Length: 120
Image (tube, rainbow, N blue to C red; front, side):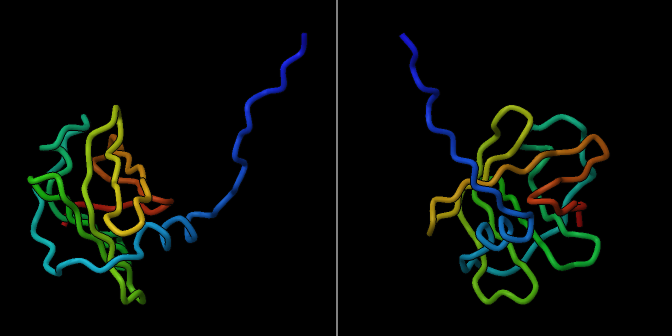
């Protein structure tokens, strides 16, 4: 008896599309300073403010498990909750429920939807 493989979603989105989806919700302003980052993903490693080198993407991970973000040119800002999931931080948007993985790189940088974020 031959069974067919389970359905696999093969939708492909580029980094810009994923970031636009992830950053589609309003949030409070004010991104605070962040300390230097260790190379292990823990809440202490990611709490604080992060920014892309060109300043177009900002992400604030708070100690209470919430986050706020900002993307240049977008009126709506994302916000929601995050949790540590293995070697990544998983953001979940309050409005859409969209989950976005954010990886802590060994250089003390975050990678989110193709963007490298540095501590502010």
